[in-house]
Image (cartoon, rainbow, N blue to C red; front, side, top):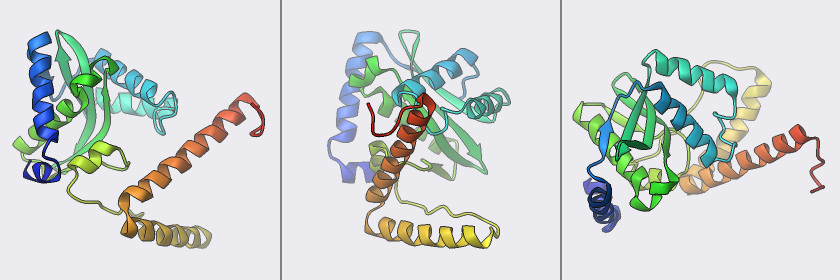
Length: 216
C-alpha cells in the first residue's frame, strides 16, 4: 500500500470515494475469496470473452476452457467473487501454488466500471492473499495498466530442458530481443507483444472466413 501511495497520490483515495458512492447506492459489496458456484464460473468466462470480443488468447480455445472448468471443479482454480445488491459484478480466478497466488482471469461487469469495481475486486483479492500469508501475488504475463500500478517488479520467464538446435537458435534470437526490450522498457515489450498477438488473431479470423488479407 505504501508503494501504491508513492506511485500515485490519487489512486487509493479515488477508489475509496468510488466505494463509498457504490455502497451508498447499492449497499455493502459481498466478497467471497473461494466461491464454488458453477454459474459464477460460467459468467466469469463469458464476461472475459466479451471483453476481448472473442480474441482472448486462452479462452478462444474450447479445450482451454474445458481444462479451466475441470480445474475449477477440482478446486484447483480458485474463483473469487464480488456481489452488489445480490448480483455478481466482478470475478477473479487464480491458482495457489506453493503458497504463491497466481492471478489468471479478472473480469467485471461493464455496468459497474464507473465505480472502479475491477480495482476494488483486485484490492480485496490481494488483501486476502496477504492476510493468509501467501509468499507473493503474481500477475503473470501481460501489460494491462493495473499491473503496472500494483506490481513491485518484473520477472523474466524462461523454458526448461534442452530443445532441438533449430529451436535453440530461434529462442536465443528471441531472448536477445526480449531482454533488450525489457531492459529498455518492460511496458514497451508488452505493448509490442500485444500488437503481435492482435495481428495473429486478425490473420486467424481472415483464414477462418476465407477472406484475403487485402480485401474488406
